[in-house]
Image (cartoon, rainbow, N blue to C red; front, side, top):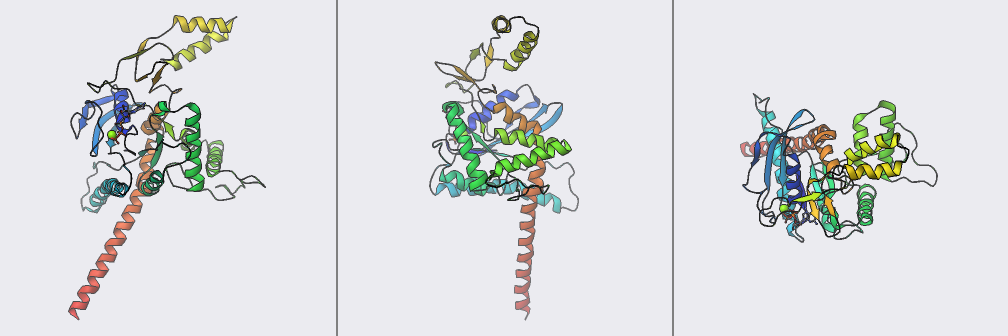
Length: 368
Ligand SMILES: Nc1nc2c(ncn2[C@@H]2O[C@H](COP(=O)(O)OP(=O)(O)OP(=O)(O)O)[C@@H](O)[C@H]2O)c(=O)[nH]1
Ligand SMILES: [Mg+2]
């Protein structure tokens, strides 16, 4: 699910994500609850809609549903919009609870829980989170795994992006302590193994403490989940760039790029060449020149350069995509079930018990 302020690039992200998946879709085309959402020229989103598909990612078949939501405006409307999104998230839990309560449960019932919510941070100010962002994050983080992102990151310089990442991490982890995805409670002075993490005069940030604890898990148990979480925390919040669309058709504009278009491929080859090259620098230049690959890329074209959505040196789109579809897929799903669904279930069952006992005592009064 994508959530965030109006015009922050949510729909462009959904479109870009789908565009990069076209080779992986194995069942039908996109089933859209609202026609043409992926094809017409971009419009502000006025109502929530879903895009569902089956994809094959690293040999694993996954049913994927992307949910686009209308952008948050300001003022009192925020509360109304927040309630609407919270209700949608809760409704998915309600479906599971109803299924669980049946005498004969459907073993094949689909898990429709919202496993992650990409929150598009307001980038108007890079000195701190907006009032609305703080409020929305505090509310939604009690229901869903929040994964923070910085949309339209091509409009920020490298220094601005880094500042925004630093400010965001400090506010979320140390000042507000909002339990977004990746926030783990670590004791003030001790980590989970009971070792002291703060020495005299040194007060590590909450994020540093979490990272230290995860590093220990990796060192001691070779814990793959902890390792994936370290990668996640080191990139978060993820910078994203949505493709530039043709204003008539809404389709990606045709951008041909010849440099860095297959950077990982070029890099591998360079290293091989460098090993037995007597004049490494010359050989490297020659190689790139001879092997220039000109291909269409998803991106945005500026007079000074082309920014590519899928180039890891331009933004974190690919890292996020991998995290969502493989590295963190199971953790997000399990966390949603064990943390958020369980919490919803407990509250609902407690409310039912209270209501029943209230009704019971009222009936008792009548009889008397
Ligand atoms: N420079 C730049 N512009 C972008 C990017 N993504 C989207 N845009 C532009 O920003 C405008 C809004 O993009 P949308 O994707 O519709 O934003 P949204 O968050 O879905 O907006 P609402 O549905 O109104 O909440 C459009 O003109 C896009 O072309 C990006 O990564 N970089
Ligand atoms: Mg939109």
